[in-house]
Length: 245
Image (cartoon, rainbow, N blue to C red; front, side, top):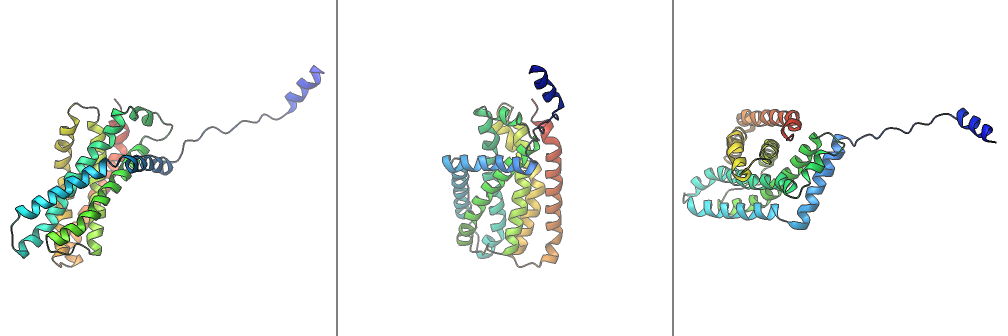
């Protein structure tokens, strides 16, 4: 009986279960971004802090820049982007710091997925948070600075500028997360690099508000797009080395 059972087992084909395959880069990045969004919906810490800071900055600029109507319209683009940059820096500082303080960063890095999924997930979350603040700021600047910000190409500049800033900011935030005084170190490292995004974004936005044609502003759009590609590509290649302790 035992011999028959042994023969039967030896004659059966060997079935090998497929090895575990980690989730794809897109799926893992979406999971990280969705986690951040759900956490923000519960706490409302990051967006509320960014919004309060942006609102106070807009009000200060509105009362401090006592120009005539033409001067206020000319300064609207600069005020918008300076406010977004500083509010975005506040959000970027809380992005990975919260994971580090709660002890979740090591677990995310040990997950069986490409570590760049963490970068793209954090990039998507930071991009969404900054876009929410930008959408709220547009009507405020329209009223306070007497200039219409609701133009299609202005939205394109916002998308490109915020994407580039969130891309390089997420990388710099991951570099400073292990350092002492990271709240001070982040803007010191980030803001000089962000000038290559801020300058073309401000020039393109100001030109659109003044009625300049797209052909005349094409150089700023091309510069902004090229900067985004370079920064995000470099961040994708360097993120795995940056997060290693």
